[in-house]
Length: 93
Image 1 (cartoon, one colour):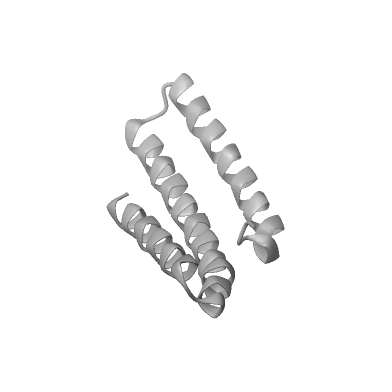
Image 2: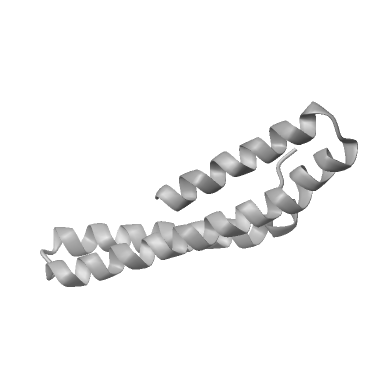
């Protein structure tokens, strides 16, 4: 089960907005926009992606991990390990 159920529409909206931002960056590069302006937009896209990732992680922790912890056993350890690995990837990014 996906853990983003409650926030699904918000996540989709955010991703569509990010998609539009990416198209804008592509257009800027195609039009030879000033490099710093392009980099500013790239930073904005990165920030939007991080915010989206945090929302997904929050949903995962609040649903998948909590449900697995309530059931106990190896499933709980697996979900916590998955979350830890996801957090590590986000921190490295």
